[in-house]
Length: 281
Image (cartoon, rainbow, N blue to C red; front, side, top):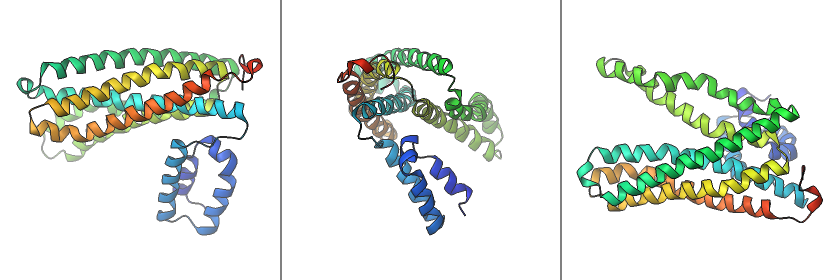
């Protein structure tokens, strides 16, 4: 018998993986048991499956899934960079006299680039939503429902923080003010990526999203460069120490965005079967 934690872990694998190995993996868990170590291994395996999606042998379907994975990955990296950028700016604003003007200009450029990339992603999301509505595959958008319970924690976080600062005893209020928005930000990054994977949009929509992901990847890279400059050129040792984790996140996001968007664009520009370009591949 598989417990709830194991079922959640099994459901966290990407659809392409579950299509090929879901039944075998579930049977294996039933035979071996679903203890904490097994659940942990399943979650680690799910992360690896998302990072290295299962690609079928058929070349057209392989290209479609490559573009699909690229779109999902690019969205996650944009969210990571978008969250890191204001944090770096806030940290450096505490010591304005110690931050070189060049760093501030780089951060401004990164901010404009990220906003521009956000508009590109919004246009892609509208195209994906229109295609999903046309085909009637609205069940694929169910992962977005996870945003509903976490959104209120984001909205009321400032009020909770103000209350926590007045009442020193309100430890759990302050914890909710921090963990609630964190849960919303994580859900905001993961839920749309899962929805894109489940929607199975046609090739023409995926090509548009995959090619536009290149511009988003460059915006994410600009943010990574700005954060590196903020770390290396700032004269405040405390600011350097605090920005180290943020720097690691932005560098990882920039690398993942460039690699994944490059692979997605390569798949989008591949025209081995021109007859399939107008529809599903």
